[in-house]
Length: 136
Image (tube, rainbow, N blue to C red; front, top):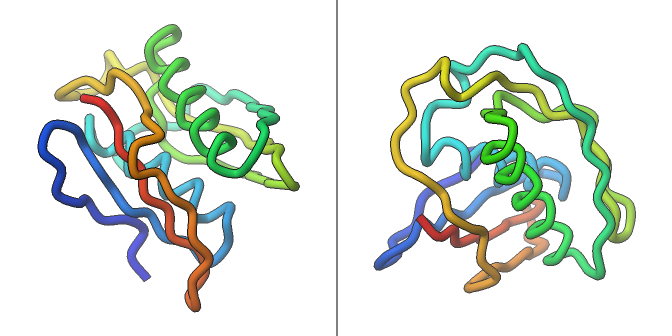
């Protein structure tokens, strides 16, 4: 099963992420977002951060999760390598993110913001499918 695919969009970046569980789909959404800028597989796990997020609904939880990762990139230079121990219960999320300072890698582009435009979370026969558009 593929983790994500990029979709055609006029001005921004759009992707569809997949997962057998909602947690897998959230993880793959984060990887897809960071892979717009560079290859997460090449990033070393030097820095570890725990994240706790509470939101009003699942779409807001996804938005807040991706926004928190983008905030850590912008404020602390944390470029994602992987996510571990991700647990979603109702409208709360906890996880550990691992990565490194983005300055140690050759990245291109910039993600300005996460958007609610076309955002969706769907349960499918194979698990979950998430669609996200980010402003680049």
